[in-house]
Length: 111
Image 1 (cartoon, rainbow, N blue to C red):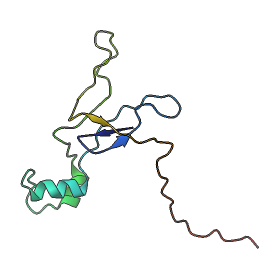
Image 2 (image 1 turned 90 degrees about the vertical axis):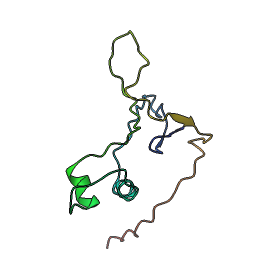
Image 3 (image 1 turned 120 degrees about the horizontal axis):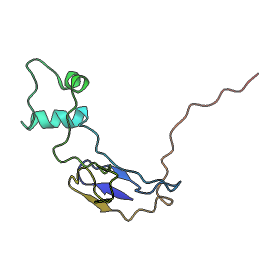
Image 4 (image 1 turned 180 degrees about the vertical axis):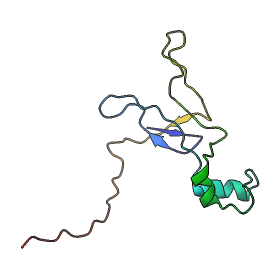
C-alpha cells in the first residue's frame, strides 16, 4: 500500500484482481478549500461562499499527482502525467488491515 504525499490518499497500485491502479489526486474538498481561503492562498469572488465555489469550479492542488500515462508510445513507457510530491510505501498489510464495521439498522423479519 502507498500513500500519496500530495493528497494523503492511500491505495494499492496493483488491485486484488491484478489490474493496475493509476492514482490521480482529487480536487480540493470544501474543508481544504476553506483552509486555503483562511490561509490567504485562494481568493474567492465577492460574496461567494466556499460551498458555492466548489459547485461552480474545480480547485486543483498545486502539487497534484496524476499517475495516468501521457502516451502509449514506447519511447517513455513508465512516464506519468504529474509526479506531485510523490508516494511513500506503507508497512500495512491490506489483508491484515482493520475492518471498520458499519452500524446497520436491524433487518425487519417478514411475517
